[in-house]
Image (cartoon, rainbow, N blue to C red; front, side, top):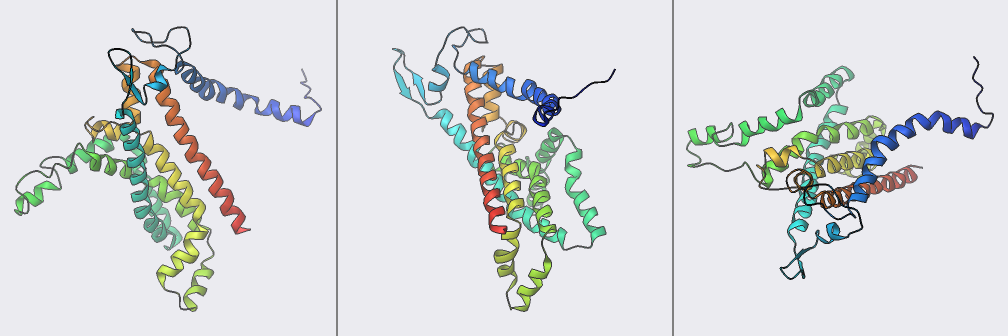
Length: 299
C-alpha cells in the first residue's frame, strides 16, 4: 500500500516534526504545565491539591501567617533561594577559573595527546554522581585525606570542619560540573586561528594581552555556553547539598523535594519548581542573547 504525502511542503515538514513535538509535549511541557497549575491550587492536608484557585503557595514564598491570619514577611525561603543562586554563581566562577586554563592547555597539545586529555576530562562522567559525592567525604571529612597529614605534622590540633557547609557544597558543584565548562571552551578554542596569536606575539603583545584581547573574545560563545551549563545544573543540584552539606545548607532542589515528600505541600512545591524554571529560563535567555551578540561581532 502506497502512502501519499501531502503536496504542501509546510504540511510535510510539520508531519515530520510531529513525533518529536508530541514526545516533547508529553514528557516535558505537560508535566511542567501541571506543576504550574498545581501552584495555583489550595493544598490538601493529606497531600495533593484541592479544587479551586489560591495564591497561598506564591504568598508563602515571601510571607508567613500569624495566629490571627495576618501576613508577616518571612525571608527564610528567600535566603534559601539566595544561597542557591550564590553557590551556583560561585561554583560557575571557580569552574571557569580552573576550566579555562585546562582547556587552553589541552588545545595547545599535539592531536594524539589531546584525545587522551579529553578522555581524562570525561572520565568522571562514567561514575555515578552519588559515588563521586561520597568520595569527597573521605577527602574533606574528619580525619580525611586532607586532615590526616596536617594532624601528623602538627600543623593543626583539631578538625578543620570542612564538611557540611557552603565550602563543601561549592567543592562538590565544581567537581561535578567542571567538565561541562572545559568541553565547550575547548570546542571554541579549537576553532581559533592561532596565526592571530603568533601575529600578536610578533607585535610584542605579552601572554596576558593575547588571552585578553584575542583568545577570550574569539572563544566567548564557548565560555558563555560552559557558564550557563554549569550554573543551571548547579542551581538544580540535589546531591551536593544533601551529602556534602549534610542537609544543613538547603538549596532549592532540596526544598522542592521536601515539599513534595515530607511537607506534602504540593502547591508550594509547584511554585518553587516554577521559580527554579524561571531562573533557568533567564539563564538560557542570557546565553541566547550573548551568543547572538557574539555572532554579530564576529561578522
